[in-house]
Image (cartoon, rainbow, N blue to C red; front, side, top):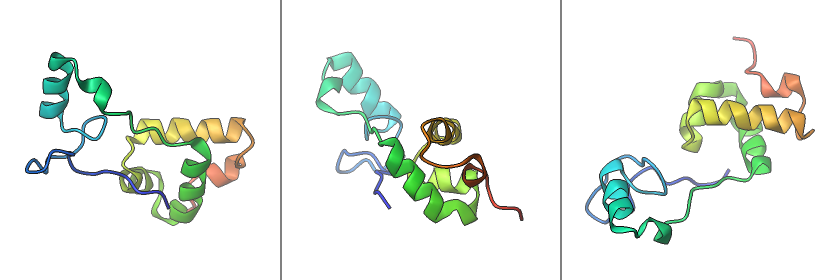
Length: 98
């Protein structure tokens, strides 16, 4: 399973990540200063999302998305694109029945 950053990159901050490994406050600070380019986007290749989903499928979509550090909507879109790209079947993209 691929690792995700869950807390801000700044040493003493510890706030939840908003974008680019930064909390909302530090993201805004770097945006205003024009230094946001120094922090790459947290991009996850679709095959990795699919692989991680197949391992975490028993948890359901919401918990799997949370574990992967993705929003639920982004996670669902990644699964839909995975089906479209032939990386998994429609049945595999669904949560198992409870």
